[in-house]
Amino acid sequence: MTNSLFETAKPILEKLQAHHFQAYFVGGSVRDYLMNRPIHDIDITTSATPDEIETVFDKTIPIGREHGTINVIYKGEQYEVTTFRSEGDYDDHRRPNEVFFVRNLYDDVQRRDFTMNSIAMDINYQIFDYFEGQQDIKHQLIRTVGNPDERFDEDALRIIRGLRFQSQFGFHLEEATFTAMLNHIADIKYLAIERIVVELKKLTNGDFVSKSFNNLKHFMAFKYIPFFKHYVITKFTLRNAMPFTTFVAFLISQQREIDANIADLKVSNNEKKRIKTLVQLIDQIDEVQTKSQLKLFVYDYGKKDILE
Image (cartoon, rainbow, N blue to C red; front, side):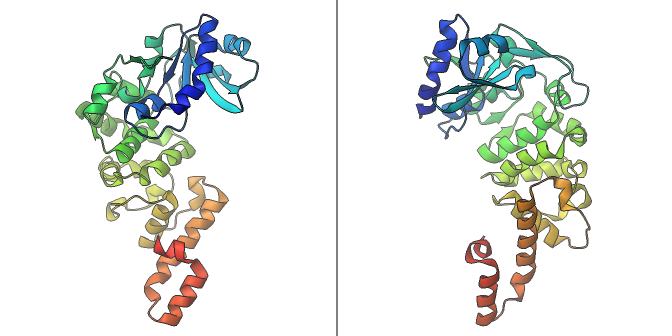
């Protein structure tokens, strides 16, 4: 296990504690630390309110102040520090109507999506695991914190996130969690396409994408997602990890009779251009029959893209 990022972020926790606030590492960084996976981002949760966080630190950015998140700048690095919080009702399957700041770690972690993401760790690497997240990691199980129907009713993106974690880790879905995903999949139609695409980009690149993609097909998820809802996804099989743009290009090439607009995906202009280039490449690759045709083909598209 590598703890270098935690060591670098320790002074943030120390300063909060020096002002008599609780502070912990939480979420994906703790999960990845326990799984001995690379850690990219450190999230910190604290009993300090946003006002109090800004008082403790000299340099801050109020990126998500209304939701309790303040960016703390320390030695040139930015750290997201979020106040312990609980949430009100969800009316749109996307975001809570209200956020309540609380002073208790348990109240904060019980609102999180999956048990493996609800684990907190203090400055001395002591683990606080109220929902058996470590046990679920050990058993390679994806399970919601509390009632899965409630978790997915609150935020339907958690369904796609759960499948993304399955694609990345190869874990299996706990039975009640799987059933609740199936029951609530239609609610993803309320989500912004940008949020869905962020998860799909990670999902298609996962080492265990075949399992997750089959579940997406089983749930009939794509019929609720702009652009994809026009395609017959049952015709498509995804067995190996690939960039999202490559996946979209293969789908378009497979079903050229479908007239769907890439713009519906709300991806960048560079990504749209990339998809169109890959579609042309896929369409032309079977036409390469001679050495001279191959030379021209490599000249037009480049070795890297052709090999991919």
